[in-house]
Amino acid sequence: MSEYQENIKYLIQRPKTPVIKPPMHRSIFNKSIQREFKLNKGCHQTMGYAEFKGSGPSEFLKKNTRKVIRPFVENTKKTIKNPDQCPCYPKKPSPKKKISRNFLSENVVDVVREVPPLPKHRVQDSRNGHIIVLNEAGLEPSYVFKKDFGKLPLYIEKILKKNETTRLLEIERIKSIKPPLRRLPEEERYELLTGLKTNWAELNRQFLLLPMLTDSVTKVNRKAYLENQLGNLEKDITLLEKYPALYVCDDEV
Image 1 (tube, rainbow, N blue to C red):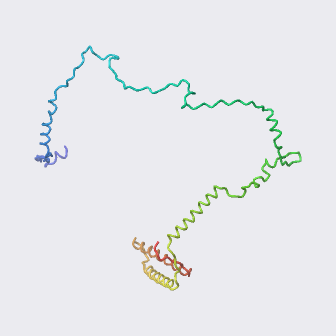
Image 2: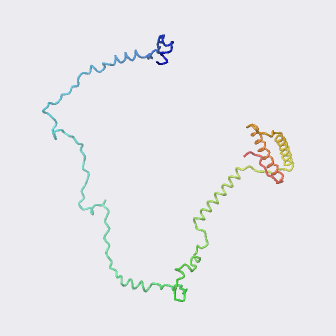
């Protein structure tokens, strides 16, 4: 037996609570829409049937029975029998006359007029008679005798000029943006140094008063904050003591 049958409270039948549904939404224009629909329902009933006389079953459509009216186009083309006689047609160039050439005599003349080649710089580098040509072997300094030897190429000069102009423009821009500097007087430097040392002494006193045991996040953060502030003050004090001549900017960048 299940637990519901063994329990006594399930023997008494409880009345079912009725589910109350919210009222269904009805539009306020429902009646007006129904009225307009009934009025416009038969608006096309008075037109009647279309007056069209249909063709009989024997009068079906056959080939070439329908009249097709094409638009009239005037023929403007003119046939030219001889295009050479037409003034608008470009004249053909007259064929050139072939000139007969005597290649044998031309070759003889070329050989006679040709400049004899210069002797090559040859060197014997072994006792067996091995000869090398210095120019062909790359052992003769021929490149140093060129006109543009030791000069920068044109494309590198253009790049350098462009970089130089951009560098000068950047320097001018920085000078125009950067505010003027002034030298820090000795009295103001001494006052700054005295104030920094006073602040350092006060922070050092607070640092020494910290508890030995840092067992919470607050203590750790407090100790790290004081150490950071002391380090910054020490850097500023060292800077002021090391450099007596300092330049400062009064305007905010």
